[in-house]
Length: 101
Image (cartoon, rainbow, N blue to C red; front, side, top):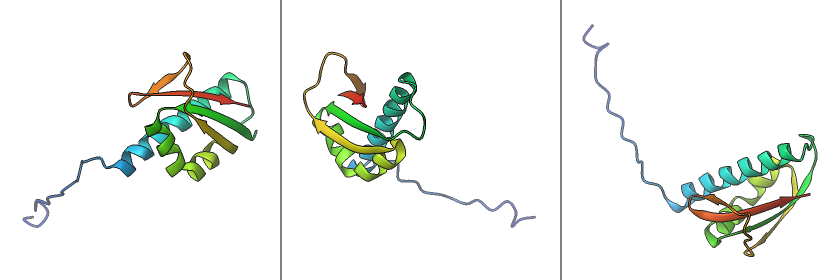
């Protein structure tokens, strides 16, 4: 029985680096796009074109994870800019505005 109750110690690195933060922002972008798809009553198989205006941190995260985002939301292309309007939302404290067609 002594072997059954041996303690095991696991060490986890909980520090976030730039890559992990970018991946998290990308997942939030995907969630926002999928919500827009539902609001517009698009079929789940419809391909879309996306225009995103956002702060630089979000634009960088999208650029770093571009293929992944496109695959997840069936985007033909994502056009990026920094002309943020008054209807923007926030992701991790950064502004983002998304339009799909």
